[in-house]
Every structure is written in C-alpha cells, then in structure tokens.
Length: 209
Image (cartoon, rainbow, N blue to C red; front, side):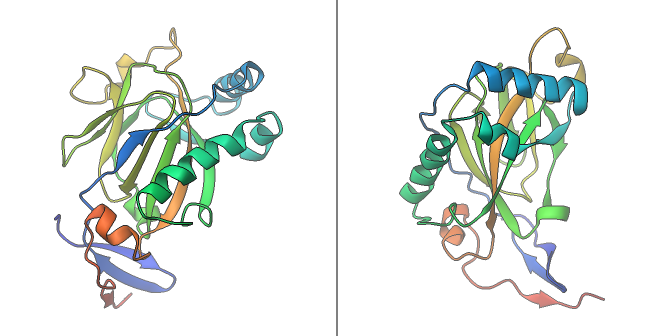
C-alpha cells in the first residue's frame, strides 16, 4: 500500500490508502457509427482543439442522440462490473464522455479523491497503452477495454512500446484520439474495498483546518 492520502468528502477532510489492484478486461461493444465518429473528430479538432496530453469532456447528450448502441455499451460495462461483485454500483454512478490524445503521468486525487474511475474505451486500437507507474501495469487500449482504478493511482496514456508519455509521439498526421466513457464510483462503497485492495474500515476523519 502507498502512504495514506487525503481527500475531501463534503466539508470533511478524510484520509485513506491508495488501492493498488487495477481490475481490467475487454468487453464486446459495437463500433461507433461513422457519423458519430466524424462528429467527435470535428469536436476534438475545432472546439476542444485537443493537444497531445489533453483529456477533455465531449458532449454526451448530443452523442446519445446519434448513438443507437449507447445502451449496449453501458450494459456491457454494467455486466462486467457486476461480474466483479459490484452489483448495481455502475448504474447509480455519474457518467461522462471523454477524449484524450495521450496523457502525461498524473493522478486525479485532488479533484476526484473520493472516487475510483471505471473507464470503457470506445475507439479502435491506436497503438496506445494505459500505464500505471506504481505497478508497472500496461493495458492496451482497444475498443472494449474496460478498467477500474483508484483516482490516486498515477497513470498515463502513451505510445505502445514507449517507456513514458512523450508529446512528440502524438503527431497531428495520425488519429491518436481515444474516446471513452467514464463512471465515478464512490470510493467509500464497501464493495470497492476488496476489489481495489483498500482497507475495509471507514477512512479516518481529519480536521479540515
């Protein structure tokens, strides 16, 4: 286990360890319709102006209107998480649609310390890996890759075969964008404790001063 980390839960500052188990797999999801793929491509280039290393939000409501298989993608993720013993946790968690062109090594604990992420990747294989620095785990990102990880786990998205994220690997001549659905799973849910190798006890409360 890593050293305890602090995160905010409402007005309270709490302390917890970092989950060091990263469940991952691959589920079957339909290919994104061409019309929707082109819409994402336009959004990434014109509106988000996504640069190497950027991770940004795509408009989910607009995508769902052009995405007849959205419910099948969600159901695939639900079925996978249920097979891990998470019951209906995903169904009741907030979801967002994201895009990235690689990602420099970072963690999301400052903003999302009270959560774990469940990500379902929707793009075809772009030759990229999701890498977790503390464990050395590298997960190839292909359509249907699904992963749950503690937001305090440092991670990056890099070119397969590289040893770190490098912005120059993400030229504008190739489509290196990965689009994915992400759910925020509350870290205090007792079903996540054994899955992520977190202590089962409630994190100790600290003074917010």
